[in-house]
Image (cartoon, rainbow, N blue to C red; front, top):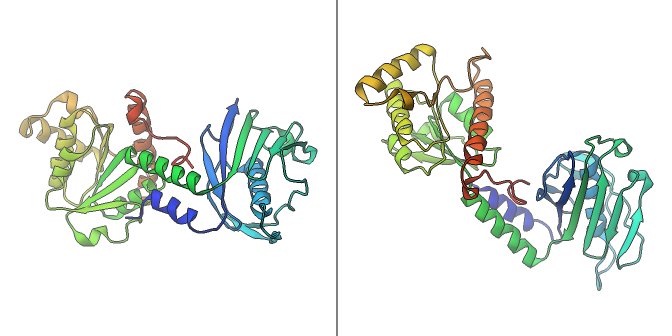
Length: 336
C-alpha cells in the first residue's frame, strides 16, 4: 500500500528546491478553502489550490522564486515549456526586482492584484474577477514559501496526523464493481480497505488502497472504528447478509450499503428480522441498492461513481454532527 503521505514524501525528495503555495485567507466565493495547498518544483506540481488563473499566477510566481538565485548561488535560467499536470507552457521570466521586500501592482494580472515578495516568501492578494477570467467573486490571499528542511518535516507530520484520522471506507468484495469502487474512492480523502475471501480478486487494486484477505470478512466490521462506511458487494449473497447484519447492529456507522435488487433487499429484510434478531430501526439504516435506483445504467464504473458520491455525502454528514476529532479532514496537507 502506497499511502498519500508517501506520495508527499516522494515529491519532497524529487527536487532540490520546492515552493509551498498555500491559501492563507479567503473572502467570499473562492475555489478552495483556507489551508488548501500545493507544492511546486521547477518541473512538476503536487496538489492544487483550485485551478484556473489564480493557480497559474501562483505557479508562475513560485517558479520565479525557484529559478531566482539565493545568496551565494549562481543564477539559473528558466526553461521554456516546463510540464505542469501534463500541460506545457512557458514560464514567466525571473522577477528582475532586487532582493528585499517590495510591493507591485500588476494590471496585466487583474486590477487590484498585489504581490508582496522577499527572497524566500511571497504573498499574492488576488480578486477573483473578470480581469483574470475567474469570476468567482471572492478574494484569495496566497502565501508562497520556499520549503526548507523544517517546513518539509512539518508538512509530513501534519499529513501523517491527518491520514491517521481519515474516515474509513470498507469495501467488501473485489469483483467488477468492487474494483471500480475502490479505484474511485482511492481519489478521495478517505482510507479505503478492500476485504476479500479470494486472493485473486485483490489483484490490481490501486496502490493507495489497503487490502485484506480473510476467511471471515464479517469480523472486519466488528473491529472497524466508529463513523466508518461499509459497502457490501461480495460474490455470495449469504456472505453479504452476514456482513450487512454485523454493520447494521453496530449503530455507530456513517453508511451501510449493499449492492442488489429490490428483491434481494426484501429477502435480506425477512432474514434479518426473523433469523438475525434484527430490528426495523436497524434495517432502516441500510442503503440498497448502493448508488440509488434513479440511474438505470448498471455498468460497474457508473455504479461506482454513484456509490462513491453517496458514501462521501454520508461521511461528511455523519462527521459534521460528531466531534471535531472525527470530522473529514480538510486541512492544508491532505486537502491538497
